[in-house]
Image 1 (tube, helix red, strand yellow):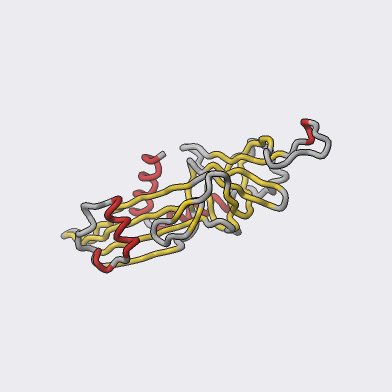
Image 2: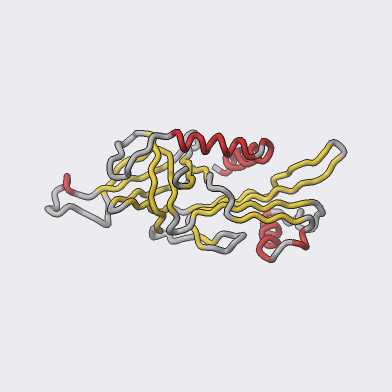
Length: 212
């Protein structure tokens, strides 16, 4: 997972925003479906409100806000004889499983293999490390200590999925018994179900805004 993530991020850093736009087009092109009506094994796009599971939430490293997923990229821009080089010095993506809720229906989202396509919630630029705030300096010292004192422009981009956000997700789901709800009569066919969305390295979940 980490190798794929870093490869994707380096390619995106090289080619710029067009690759992200291409993935957002794939998200928009996925067939929309309601969580309550989705058929298993069908690749589609669902939408809902983010809620936490037992795993709780994370703290975004740059902005400090609670979230269920974040993607932080730091690019260093250095002038060379052949032009400006763009070096991805930090790629930090973390996520915990969370719920996507639509009315009385819910889907468990396992973001182990996922691409976060939300536009950057927080962006910061600096010409020298000493111009950064405490959180940004801590990011460099943790992930790229050899770069923390180097001259050169830095660009920090952080995208987060906050609790309460309304988002859309493209992927393939399967149904499972919902431990938080059951049918009125208690029969197996009446047990309330929920979806579980799990991506893979070949087909990661696409997480974006709603509408995408």
